[in-house]
Each structure stands twice: as C-alpha cells, then as structure tokens.
Length: 193
View 1 (tube, helix red, strand yellow):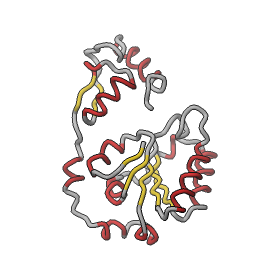
View 2: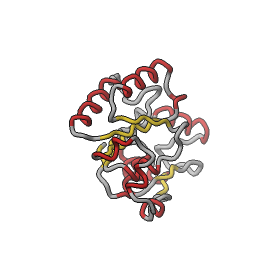
View 3: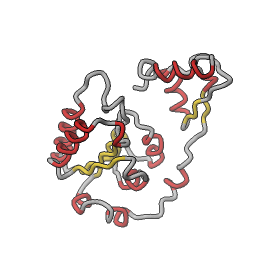
View 4: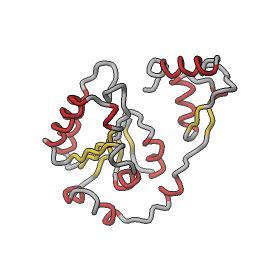
C-alpha cells in the first residue's frame, strides 16, 4: 500500500539528509504527486506532511489523449494471439527483490492470475521493473512460469523502456500501485488495485 511501514527507509533518509522528517513541514523536501488522488494517498497512507506534497499533475496526459495509432497498428508489436481478446496490463511495483510484501508467494499469485486470465480468454502483458532489482533464481522461476502460459508476454523496464504502447493497447490494468497507473488513469479504462 506504500504506507509508512513500507516507506520507513525513505523517511529515515529524508531526515538524515535534511535534518527534518518528511512527516512534518520540511522546507528542504518536496514530493511530486501526479494529481489530487496521489496527494491524498501520500498524506493519509504514506504519511508525508501535506506541506511537502506538490501536485504537478499528469505530464503525459496530452500524449495519451492524443494517441495517433489504432489498435490494429499497435497489435503488430505483440504476439498474434493478442488480437483475439482482451488485453490486461499487469504492472506490479517492486518490493525489495520481489513483488508482493509481507511473505506473499509471488509465483503462486502470478500463476493463479495467469490461469484465471487464460480461462477468460485474456492476454497479459506482465510489465516488470528492471531485472537488476530481482535475484537470478527469482527471475528464472518467473520466466519459467510465464513460458507455461501462452497468454503472457513478460517485459522488463531496462529492456523495454517505453511502456506507452503497452498502456494504450491494454483494455484494463492490474497493479499493486505501480506509478504506471497514474498515467494509465488518463486512458479512462478500468484499473484494478
């Protein structure tokens, strides 16, 4: 949930660097927020003092709203099977060498989700953060799992940097609060947290 517990190290570093905590007004620190919803989340859940939050809005909304490519044009960059149903953009944030915090078995969650999606005829773009954030055994297990599911395409941020095409081709998005969702909201399509 990106709560105070999850941000504990961030809070420690802000206090170490500025001498003032992020949970109190701090003239040396500002957190940029992508709209009023994030401002509220950062204040009420993450625990930042409202005085430290700056609503800068959505920088890419113009690109999203003025997207010039048709679905057919975009689908040329995906496996042919992706043209035959709904597409889910599964964009998890990372949590210290894994996806889900507090002892959740990532691979079990992914497997259940991939099986459910396949049963519903849904294709999944699994958009991961950089490979370097995960250990080799985790990556090997995740990639082995995705190879078992014909409906899943896995991408890593450091290898496939531009996520705009994935956002625009997706019919809906699923995430545990990736920052990518702040841009996806502008599509007006459903998202599940």
